[in-house]
Image 1 (cartoon, rainbow, N blue to C red):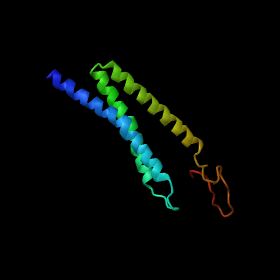
Image 2: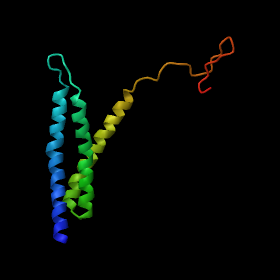
Image 3: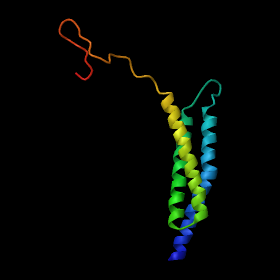
Image 4: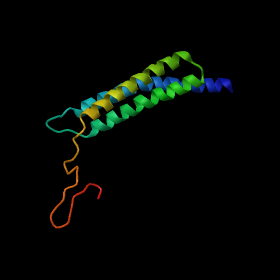
Length: 125
């Protein structure tokens, strides 16, 4: 029974490594190519490719770390741990960039404005 479990763990780790090293960069390349306007037309497919690349770029190392830690494979744990740390750093940089370029809040009164005739535009009231 232990040999089957070891074989399955090896298959899962190999598939995660292949997916991380080949599939994720291929999806990023497809997303980049889809974002280039051809003859003035752009398609919305770029976001889909890049979303899948981001999801797989985090999920595959996470699965790899869990499987390699539970099967006590230190080399694979280091490999997937470094990949997961890189994915987390890229996500943090992207998140910080999104926050920096966030749209300004909508204009409107931030305080109570009394109007003649009994009405007011008080926020929350």
